[in-house]
Length: 383
Image (cartoon, rainbow, N blue to C red; front, side, top):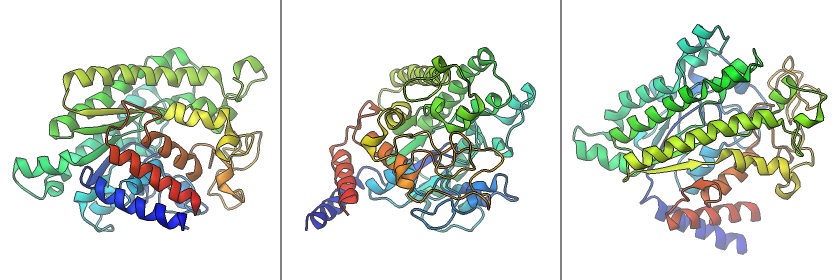
């Protein structure tokens, strides 16, 4: 009976929130990609498109680099909206639906900086770097007349004013590609202002086009990332914090986030009538590593669910998606899915803490959003 009450409450609030957000438009990398990777021909990074990816919720691989839903999926659910469909699916004619309800331009492996930047530095990168943030914004501009479904400026404004834009997470790959080839952090730090500049430029473009509500996630605490922990393993215990994460790496990504927030503050001054919301992915995820059992995770939150052995169950020669690699029995007990990406369970907790305002700056101001989020997650956990 209690579950039924909360289900009704969820539906009521979801209907109310549609008056605020009728669609979601998103940009970023594999943390946000809901299937664009599926529609690249030939496939550039097939691992996320092979079992056991997608097993928890969708029961089949669909281009999401996790066992199930991502943060963007939980945001869409909490707002009573459909999952945001991939742009390349629409472009290829393989995905149908009303694009006014939202489109996802994020693609796994994408960077903020263009491919030419990495080529000039001599770094080896995935071909998906061709689909940088600037390219994704250009895709949005090309699709905009169809999204608006109107030649009038006012008709376009109505659609964009009622849309939630999610710009990111983006930038992690800009640093990860060099990190796997060099240990020169002093060089890496010089890239941060360039990455942030591209992100802020993209936000300006969206605002100029008519966006009024923009959610901008920061970086995850990648010092807790099993792939990077394996790469930079050391016997020096002082290099690790109490959770077992690498201090130097987390300090670097905190610097990225601090600079991003500084620039977002500048944008708020320039655009006082735009709601620019910083999503603190770093601290929303860091709590899992500090107190895993509080969220239902195993005591060692650094262990990978779907991996090929090693101290963290991560082996870059036996990655998730390979036939010989078997996923854990209960994904809800793990934070890390494949060593690079998080599990659906971790993304669910992150989405909850973002939507109720714990890790957003400023907090979400719509009362129906907060109420809807609470009702949705209470209903989910009581089933």
